[in-house]
Length: 356
Image 1 (cartoon, rainbow, N blue to C red):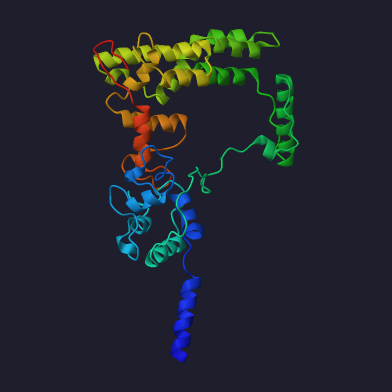
Image 2 (cartoon, rainbow, N blue to C red; image 1 turned 180 degrees about the vertical axis):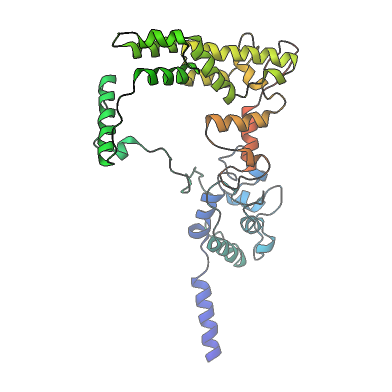
């Protein structure tokens, strides 16, 4: 009698705890697998679709996706228990949270029980936004200062800024510095804008002037000068790593035109976004589109150029992902080469003057 009760209890427990595919397994597949293995993709990864029962049972190019009763031979189970560093892990590293240990155990149990699909025949795939998506690191002023109103004029903005600075200064009990004298102002403004100290004649002209607006006028004068162009060209030449002395004959002409183009942009005070967009989308001949000199700087090294470009303009470092999945960021090696293929779908051809 005792043995009979035990058998009945085991039967009831196993029956009650049977894994429900629709309620327990399907949600995992929809969230973790459908993005790559469903009708969402024109060419599903590994020729495997699991959004319909017929496709699920058919499997992909690597064979059966599920072998009832045998999780160790089921591609589904073998893929979800791989290391995050493995190229075949599912879901791929960087595509949301990996499948948890509890979910792995649930899938294994479902397969051991015979992989029963119940009445399920088909699902309608939909894109699911990962819950692990990082929040924006940008801090909104409206969040920090909910009572802050946006001034309607430049004068109002300056007054508001000065008010906030003064308020913070008093709260921090910081002693206010006195106004800078003309001699110190002269030296600092020349170094900041022109990249040099003023000459004796320039110093005398400014210090002896009685004009109340002489400081504003000096700033405008320096911003319109070639000294300003030269000083800030040096900055951009450093950012874009211009190297005239190391270039071949053909490349030197491209990069020389590129250098002059940068100086022209500074003279024109071209908006930064326009400047960058024209450069990164440039194509053709350097005489007609000097921005292509940016790409000739790293000719035959497209991946290096792409890695540096993302560092300068996106503020993210991708170099590590060139050789392996990034250890400190969300980029995988696969995504690095995807981006490289997209950015550098370009060809360098012809002799001087050459084209991109």
